[in-house]
Structures are given as structure tokens and as C-alpha cells.
Length: 298
Image (tube, rainbow, N blue to C red):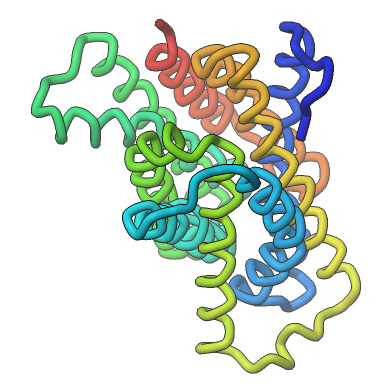
């Protein structure tokens, strides 16, 4: 996927921008679907079901001619799939019931700092001055964005609940990033992403069947449309576009381009969802993006 003659820096930049916008639009589609009465787990299930054929095809294609997976590989794939695509998605969808799309994206965007903290804990090293600055900027930005949501909230307790759930999502994704590197090196990016997503899809389906009746899948047509858009445009497409961009530009440059994501989410939330925009939220977004820029700089 995204192969052929796409080898120039311009093509890599276009793929990175495509991935950033694809990921950023997920919260918008979730927010657009909730007014129709769908619950978080049903919506997540529909999203994964619609993305399933793409990841199944990519997983089969990427596995042709490759060595068979051993038990250690399967354990790692399942563990990373549960952390990065199942648990992170469940917490995220639940959190979006309580907080704005803009705040959700800013909280999720702190995952590089959490990955950094995990790495420091595992290697038992102290943070550098640049890393301390990045952490201070990011979490000051989250505080400003929280202030924005609290100012406009009818129930402030919901903001704390939703923010905690989304932060748990960011933690799960940071765990996924911290533990996936050895598997990606052995299996390849496409094969790993596809198989880990298939494992998470099985977990999501099991969660749905254990907690909700199958009849819950009967939803208004707009819900199917939003779930389809999430499955293809906000899941499958950006996952592989980002992988292709990293091959062409490197992870540092792609990380910088991904900073468009929170800005895009906030802009689309104001435009499509009618979410209010305040100076506090703008300052919060600038601080978070500045923190990630500091931590992403070589």
C-alpha cells in the first residue's frame, strides 16, 4: 500500500499530512455519531468491523513468503493489540462522551511524553533540560485546555471523568509504542500493524458480545456512515499512510507534521460541532504543540 513511485520528499510529506488529518478527524466522527443514541462500545465495534477487511487483506499479503510466527511473536502481537488498539480505543471512545473533541486530541497528543517517561523509568535515567521543558509545556497546555472545558461545562465532574479516560487511552498507546519496536523490527511495519489490529478487533468483538445484545448493532444509517468513515479514513488509511511517510521522511519529521492533528481537530470541532473556542484553549494547544516540537527535535 502506498508503494509504486511515491519516493520523493513531497510524496512523503503528503502522506504525513494525510495521516495527521485522518487521525484528527476520528473524534469529529465520534461526536457526530453520539447524538443518534449509539453507545461507545457499539460505535467502536462498527468502526473495527468496517476496518477489518483492509487489515485482513494487508496481514495476509504482508505474511506471504515470511517466516511463520512463533509463540513469542503471537503473545507480543496480542499484548500490543490489546494495549494500543483495544484498550486505548475503548478509553478514548468513552472519554469522548464527556469532553470536547479539541481537549480529547490535546490529551491524546501527550503520548510522546508518556513514552519518554516510560523509557526513562526502564533505563533509570533522569530527564534532560530539554525533556523537562517539553514535559512542562505539554502539561501546562493540558491544564489550559482543561480550564477551557471546565469554563463551558454544565457538569464539571464529567470533564474530569472524560479527561481521565482519555489520559488512560494515551497511557495505553504509550505502552503500545514502548513495547512494539522489537516486534516491528522482526515482522515489518505493515505485517505488525495489520496483525495487531486484527487481535484488537477480536477483543472489541468479544467485549461487545459479552456486554451488549447483537440487536444493538441495528443503528440509524448516519451511524453506519460515520463508523465506515472512521474505519477507513481514520483507521486503516492513516495507519498505512503514516508508515509510508516514516519510510520516506523518518520518524522525527513525521512527528513534526503530526502536530497539524490537534489544530485540525480543534478547527473542525469549532466548524462542524459548534464547540466554543477560547483564548485558554488556543494557549493550551500552542503549549502542547510546542512541547511535542521540543521533544521531537533531534
